[in-house]
Image: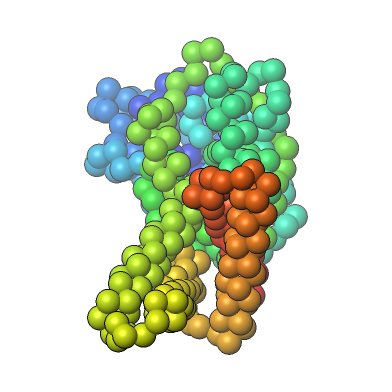
Length: 360
């Protein structure tokens, strides 16, 4: 029988209820093949999985002996897909949650979009975050995450939390290697997509929430994981700044009190110590950001030139702004410098990401 769908449907599942049965019943009328992953559900839920496998053909049932997380379940399904004959018959996979939050029509729509976009495609089903159907807490969390995601990574996405996504098969090996085994995995793949060789598309889906909605998202623990992944880039940038600060202060002290003769005039001593320490700390900062924060593999002349041009402009901007505000306000230069340098650092992060270390 010829397949109606362009993709295989992937459903990660943990301790499911009747909503999974409903989803499988509706989806099986369109999807000839469905990969269902039991992510370590309790034994009392075995009857649901047995009923599904007995009632529908085309179910590829995979099971984790213990709960490993949504990300791990998705990777298991994708590894199974590319290692089987399914990869020869379909353009990719569509992932959907098992908790009834996605309309079957929307799942089918993402499948069709994947068929249209073809190779090197990641498609996200985005919800209307202003919908009255979405609870206030979810609305605030989703919108805040989307705004923060855009501010930190320069990627404008309407919905970074949606679990309804489509992936062309040529990017699946890349997806399997993305870090994260739980809910943070889906955020991580969006962050890494910034430098990947494929396109990210969005397609509108219905916003569906129920009062008795059952979710396995552990509010505090999983939120911390997702936030940690979201902030990983800026945290790495901050670490680079701390390392540079330590190098700057340490080298200044060594030069000032050990290497430069005390007989040298104080003003000249301070100038030499400050200049050399600042140059050495900038080298440490450059190397850390190049290879760690922004994940580069080599140093180019262009990135060096751009970095030190930014470094020089930032230095002048800090000096000029602090001098101007101190003069106008009449003091408080320490607090003013802290605020100015913080703003400049955030701007520098964006400029380094989008210009200095931008990947082709």
